[in-house]
Every structure is written in C-alpha cells, then in structure tokens.
Image (cartoon, rainbow, N blue to C red; front, side, top):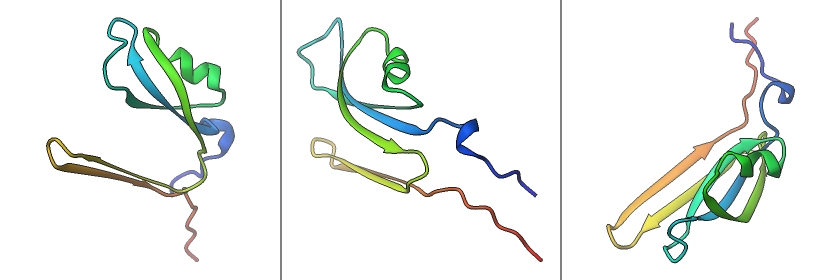
Length: 89
C-alpha cells in the first residue's frame, strides 16, 4: 500500500509568475510555475528572469488550468486533485 504524504514532506504552495527573460525584456511574458513553501524560494528557482507575481495556490487544493494558443490553435488543460488515502478492509 502506498504511503500517505503529508504537507510537511511536500511544498505547501504552487506559485505562478508572469515572466520574461532578463536578456529579452520586450518579449511576451510566459507563465512559470513552481512548488515551494515561500515566494522567495519560488523566485530563487528562476534566476535570470524578471518575475511578476500571478498566483499562490494551496498544494492540497484541486487545480484545473487551461491554455489556448490562438496562433497555433492548440489548447492544453492540466488537471490535478488532492491526494487521498484509500483503505481497503
């Protein structure tokens, strides 16, 4: 049986930033996402990027994110749910 994970063993939040590379500041921003306990730790994961805070999402909350690129007419959808322990008698 799989072990149950606790918030102490994984980051508490998912941080989202709108970002542009330092060497190309006039490009269209992209969304960068990182799991960390603090905003400072999340920002430290992206050296060389100019970051603008976009969102702070609790790691335990379910999340659904959808993106659509009008140029290529492609869409992406990401769906995650909170981990739940299942016990069988």
